Image: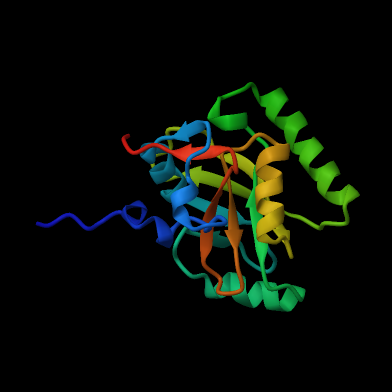
Length: 175
């Protein structure tokens, strides 16, 4: 039986384009393709009302589009402040980071909705996260830098979640 291609085999299907296209994935730090695959193979759950919304990178979400429309926004950002740069830290450190993220967003007039990111392989514990309705691509990248995240998830007006890599992060050619 032939193996289906993984969405990361086509970067344009999963990555938010950077200035100059995808060729500028040459930051001083490198993210492995295996880690990028793990980000794609994650369920991003938004605890929206009246029902949770599950987002998958590269797959349009009619539920999120309808929810965004009801909220009066066209785009959103899904972000966690846990485990900076993919390094596991203790729960109290992650809790403090999430409080700082909430405060930072609130202080700049951004609303947020609780969420959770859970990898399909369950190798990592689920990470508390937030959906920021109305958050744009610039905010997605700013949050990566401010909260030391390899990536956030940006959802545009088409309802397709994309990985927004940290601006200083390159993509490794090998796993």
